Length: 347
Ligand SMILES: Nc1ncnc2c1ncn2[C@@H]1O[C@H](COP(=O)(O)OP(=O)(O)OP(=O)(O)O)[C@@H](O)[C@H]1O
Ligand SMILES: [Mg+2]
Image (cartoon, rainbow, N blue to C red):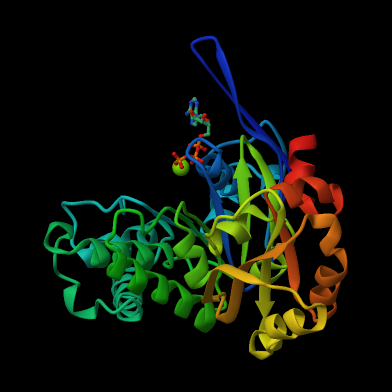
């Protein structure tokens, strides 16, 4: 639904150049909720502004619903942009207009008659659960309600795509959850594709089907949450699913084990311990729901260095578990298992 190819954007100010986008490739499939995470300054907002062409990229292409936006100009671009809704961290509502008038604004621009606008605005407010606040002013609403108005306004042009830049960052956790639930509902019921930017992994965990990590103007990893959780060395997976626990000393092997689906219920650790007559220490463990699926992660320690534990670790892999060496072991397994993080440092 959204394809971004080799997008670049350099800002020049006071003689300094910042490569805010440095060759970004991204693919968001139709009907998915896609999260972009990354530190402050990574280029996330620049990316989203270049996707709806609020800002012109220096090079590269942006295709939304099969249309290359970078090739459009003027009227064509404005028309294409009505099919892309956008919501913002600080809601961007007009304080002198009522809730209904705020939602009607884009409908005015689209040229709908007064009656059509009112009907559509009230339908949209109903959709976001605010039908009874149509005549209120933004200052009379809570943050969560303001963002619902922002969402209703973003849906005015019947968009296929909704872009969100930190739309829940100004909200408390409970309100965040309800706004995310609304986005999820809209995604399911309207088939809306959602691209959201966030710095909160909880947001990714709660609503995203896929995610990408941005760093210094580049996407360093990207995929469905399942794929990321199954990628050795994935930073997103580690942040989605942190397991703590320190090893006892250098003469041991520490690995993170990720259980997906069926593997979560089998007694693999006791099986490992009996088969190889090993004392297995559990350093940390957690179960959680990621992308709507149960996932478990456990950090275990085996006696002896990594080289001596190749066979028992192979046994765990054969059981369908994902094994990520931690610490000294990870350094010794090389590019094969350290995967993305190695790739990245090689760039
Ligand atoms: N209009 C601008 N003029 C000059 N530099 C800019 C401009 N907008 C962004 N930048 C720079 O581009 C880089 C990327 O900024 P961007 O706002 O995209 O980051 P971000 O990932 O959204 O960060 P945050 O999480 O803080 O919102 C930063 O180094 C920023 O200083
Ligand atoms: Mg930003």
